[in-house]
Length: 89
Image 1 (cartoon, rainbow, N blue to C red):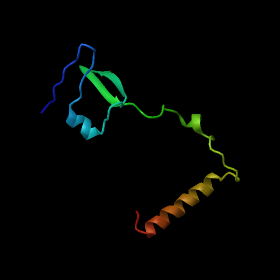
Image 2: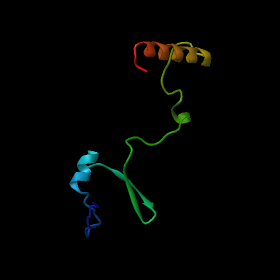
Image 3: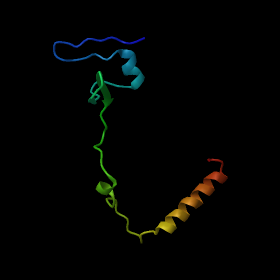
Image 4: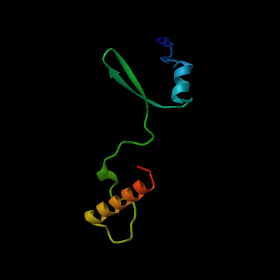
């Protein structure tokens, strides 16, 4: 069953309680609004702005010698095998 709501004179729309509860949307939740076909799409706004890998690469301090790609692949492979042995995968 579709929910029905009404636009107020102040331009506000009340979201039905069962929808707010099912999504854990509380007062103060911010949303992005996108026009879509014959309606709008309402999404909770992200907590952080979108960034690319280039924006954040190297931002954490690491004071040891950098690892090579081969060393990183070996370490990942060892960890996967160890977790597999413990029944995690």
